[in-house]
Amino acid sequence: HERAFPENVRFMFESFKQTEPTDVLARGRAVEAYGGAEVIVLDTLNRATPGAEENSSVDMGLAIEAAQQLQALTGGLVLLVHHAGKDSTKSMRGHTSLFAAMDAVIKVTKDDSGRREWSAEKVKDGEDGEAHQFRLHVVELGQDEDGDTITSCVVTPELEADADAQSSRPRRPAGNNQ
Image 1 (cartoon, rainbow, N blue to C red):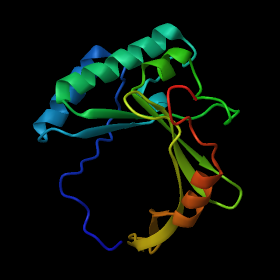
Image 2: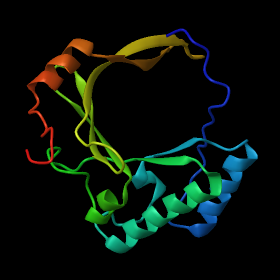
Image 3: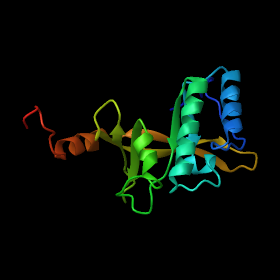
Image 4: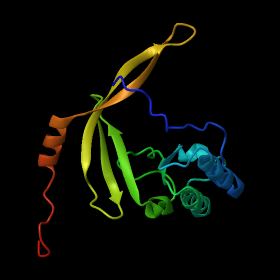
């Protein structure tokens, strides 16, 4: 969209083991040293928990506890990027305690035409089920030192598709007796 990149966005690329309390403490201190953060994105949960067994309640419990500690240390929202299992019609992969512990779960899907949709699978203090369709459009940012094109994506809402999707969904009950 030809806008300057926000100055207050920071990326940390050093390895990080979310299940190690010393790593969580060090990450929290590093975030605070850079002026704090309102949102911390761990991309992905799998990479942030090397060696952890996603199907283990113990390992996922440690990962959940670490995310809560990072949130407490920084005062920011901790967003975990996680993947669906082999069957994308089901919930996220791994132990059920992960889904249960989340305040919100947003699922992103893609159809054969390239249209994507995000949907609110779980919203602790709100309504589940809201969905919006979008597309990713590739944009060229420039060239690297070898002359190769550098690209990224821009999210574009699919407003017409959103309206169709909303109208085709079953209506929720309007009152206590319905």
